[in-house]
Length: 359
Ligand code: IPM
Ligand code: MG
Image 1: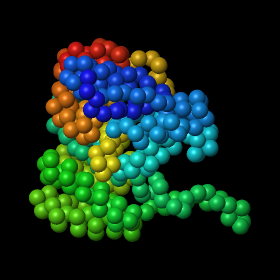
Image 2: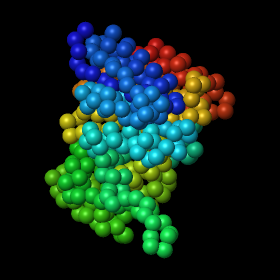
Image 3: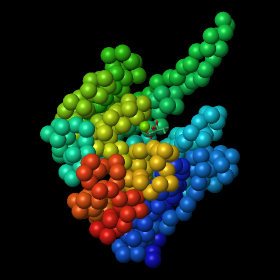
Image 4: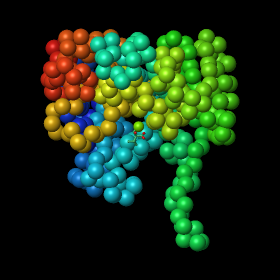
């Protein structure tokens, strides 16, 4: 087998290892039968890494992530590690990976598979045919802005503070990514911010508008984030591509996920300027259902598809994986999160089996 690349496999915590296992089976299948040629190397991350090595992102894990062409990550976090100092908490591993690897463009598609229309809490006519892409800036904004902290004032009261900050370069590069993505889709881009209140958003709007001058074929609109959150629930199909900052994207992408019936269906890609990427399901570690073989592995499997497309330039394999997922759904296979009351459900591994069979 010729090697086309290395994938760092970081299972993480909670349901992470279970869903990642199904993603790895897909990669191995495509290695065997379609010459994908990917070498998978594993390393611990998050709480699991803290338990083993005393740090959520051990040096060896970071080194592997840097060396690899792509990273497939499960999920991190859990009650067990919540009281650790902030810098040792599992989530810190995610944030460090994003910033150390410069993964500034976070792609979060929200697609409603026709088979799952009934799983959405919204009316079928509102969501059927939904296909939107949220492009979230991932290495800047209030998540990383300085100064930040909790200080004690002279009178003894404590003040918590964070800084929402973007420079022109950061805005320009995420806008470029979003316009390019819009070009490959329906050529409509909505930039979401809060320019009626925040200076950082005022600059955001100005720069996005300026970048837009180089993309006359893409229709650009602007929307305040409060309105965008309402429009997402009211009429989500008005959107094609949304570009927004780190914090707003975090919030809007969770809202968008529910349009599709389950957060268990949503993949994501976090890309640097050279299409190196970290791929992860949008859902979290769900400790309450971990180890029970009931988690939905489809978000991870769809993340593998995104990896083939964006990092390895194998749109053919990406489409085959996505098609296999659709086929498994069409055949009626459902994990609990996407089943209606009357539908029988299957487990994590069995859903992996169903997708592999369809492949
Ligand atoms: C996400 C998550 C993370 C974020 C957390 C776990 C740090 O919510 O990827 O959306 O806030 O970015
Ligand atoms: Mg989030």
